[in-house]
Length: 329
Image (cartoon, rainbow, N blue to C red; front, side):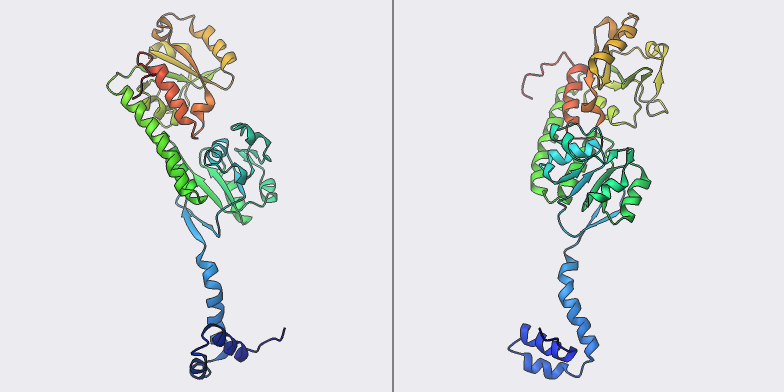
């Protein structure tokens, strides 16, 4: 192909895009400096591509720029993995962290280390167009190293149940499935509203949630667990502790006089049995007297993911067993 000098390119451009007025325009524009005109041509050609980029604000107020809808996503936490599958985008996941066990398909995805210790080299090798991180778990320096490597990182920070739903909506927008996520989240919000109506004015029994049994460990008000207890119609007995996850001895538990004890465990049978042997030795506990010592799957209440609503429904039934939960509300 014959190369064009600046003047020839200018004439070619005008004839190509403005054929009817090209003679007039060429006569008017020929006095312009060639380099100036060439610059205008370059801007004309490339501005459409630049304007396609979209800037999103993440939960930390950071700008995350995406040139197109992300199709190669790395999840940097198990909760985020669940979110992406919930949005119906599991096929876009090219990497997940260890313990990304739900749904089952996630277990077959390439692993990029634990969410507290991301393998930066592995993430880079997967060539993602987006990595999604969480404040509660991922290290700030890991996020910074990924960005230095040219990888866009979108950070979420859900601390309450409704904030999980807000994060889902933002991820749906970032991933180009806005209409779909609106429908999915509307269903979750309706389920939460149904629980709220059911437990309204039904009292607030004192709840001791134990997320660990050796040692016993509760949760304070700065946790998503506290929000679950509140929404389920209970009162978190360790909510006022200054430590996020306070260690408790049996004297502390007796002093709190819990109406209900809920034990969160990844190995429900084994941990519940251990805790039960210790707690049932103390019939002075109201929860023991009433037989209100229960276990709950930790995945349902520990992960800021869509299944948190399942955890809320389960917890509401444990805190308010007197209600007829089979009736539509």
